[in-house]
Length: 292
Image (cartoon, rainbow, N blue to C red):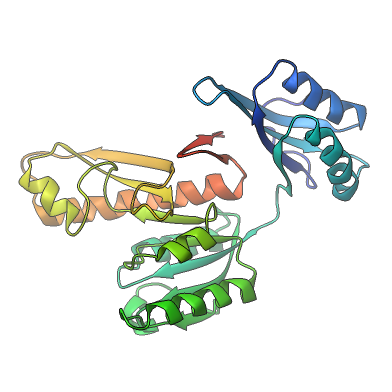
């Protein structure tokens, strides 16, 4: 077995799973891989005593086995444990659709991290309720841009258009990079488990409009940002990643906004990295995050 975090193996696969907790699962999974000549590169597990569920993430080199063979054989194995599982190619860029309104600092950051190879994603579309000129700070380049204006009356049609675009480009993840529109319940459920939002506050906390001004009025000593999955419950989806930054009595609202944008950029980027590396597993209203 290779050391945890080993990055060798260009055709490496990632197996993630969860099931009811019971003795011997780790041994059975690793034995399954060993018997098929696979070399484990990284392995993490978690036994949640609250939900009595077992979670596991294994990165491994399949050697001479194809992913199709392993997937077929593991399917029969997993049925014995009632597992929810996924087998994915580790190094394949995930196809991402990014949604944005007027504040494009997160969009610009994601595009930069993609172009420098820091984020293993493939931006397949950018959707905005504002024209392209509204996000002129971001170098969109050849990434397809779709302007879908929205009003209360046109919201159902606009959301249907957005779902069609996501299907057409094969989006595996939808990112709300400061997209300042609330999804309908139908839209939230359609993208359940594959839509990440960046909330410009440390949740739970100051919700609604102008959270930094609310925080300033209350004299807080810390601000933050939260990346979470989108659900029909507004701003209450399973949290993926958060970060904070201390502030002082001398900071004004504009200082909080400036500092907050930096936090939002790095929190959203880290949440996306965790997602595309198959490190985030849903656990009811929470997440299990295998960091690495």
